[in-house]
Length: 569
Image 1 (tube, one colour):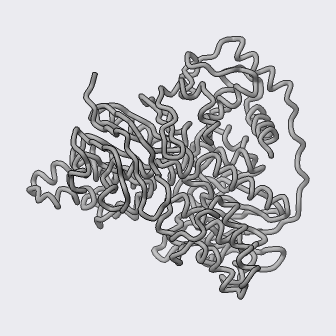
Image 2 (spheres, helix red, strand yellow; image 1 turned 135 degrees about the vertical axis):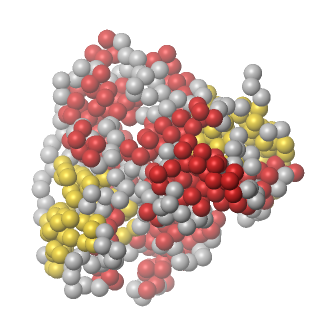
Image 3 (spheres, rainbow, N blue to C red; image 1 turned 30 degrees about the vertical axis):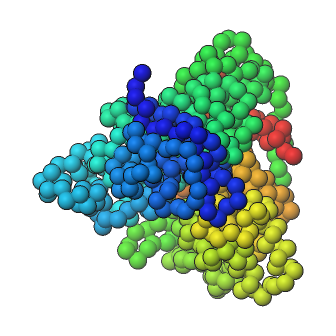
């Protein structure tokens, strides 16, 4: 048996500002060369556990600890943060927060420069690390010039250059489009096999994370480990759904068809899934016995964009004659690869940027003459990076800021802020400082701050990034209820599950153009659109093909409609 490299023995951690421990009596052993996935609902302690493994606890966070954390046999509390960094390399979910160099080469070399490595040796090791993650051709580029997937490769090279024996990935898929996320998981798997490094992945997007095999899945809840099992065993159990973690969609489809998943069916990804003839027949029978949902009536146009062209000051043309209509009370998804123009289009709509050509109208009124504030009274916007929106120290004050600037005060202000906080699952933290929150919790603060303003239309850039299935469902069900009351919701997202479950229509961006405007099921079953927009074909389609369903596209839509119906409160 291989030697342990990470050992937690009856470990408890309580932040100085909290009344209860965040981690409770954890005992965990991870051995040399293992690849382990840690998942659990938001607030379960995953990020805190990561901080314990990379030394930020106890060196950067104040609190009380009991028990033991050993890395390579050494107690972390007896080491320095620098010592731990030489054993555990961390790749953050927000790659931009990890860059320190002006070029890719400088960023990768940073740790070596701190160690006063000779120049010839430094060049050699930078080249080796860059070659390992396939980023060598971009060494002279600035990090800001890279795509999301390329940035992640640079971050990985920056820790690999130190030859660390343990790699820790904190939600590596959170900010990546579906195809790039798939490539990231493949890259992690490739690096692990080449280097035999121990890999720990913290990620709540279970189906995507299991695109490549892992040795174990550790499930956390309320600061405790509730399961430590092989993926197939965990997927066959009820534990994931009980803890608010979304199981792979193909497993949910099998359950709807009356097929009970078992470990011997190789459940961990759709490519490995084993189905017998009877199980395939059950899926086909479910499809033919489940009626299609009726089509929703068409509503009046609310927002209309015609021939929008926008270029940045450096000459880069981000939008090439984009035309799109958004109807009253619609829930629309905008999808596409990183850098396709999705966020730029939303910024033009909100007035943060001004198009060079084309027209925008809202409820029949031209938006061109309206200021950003006037547009904000009609269209709320939640940015992808919450740190770019937050300006107050306290959570309550941040959510109340828009109301304060509009002169809303007293009981009305308090009620509207507290209602928004409850919807976003933040009411218990209303008097906390924003700095005490995780990235996902900060995201919810920014959503709450916009919801408090009660806009007629809301644009959300990655609304569920970093959220577990339960919190995701709470936010999306609220948005669905808001939508049912007539508020138009537009979501820019990389989450294909979100698009399938909640949207009747998707606009697909690629290279500054809209290449498809159709139902999500049609989008994700069109190989050409999937490839051009860096999307990922849904596993539901693959399941339908495997089972011999005569209309796989219709199967996907029928599953989504049925699943939504059975899950509605």
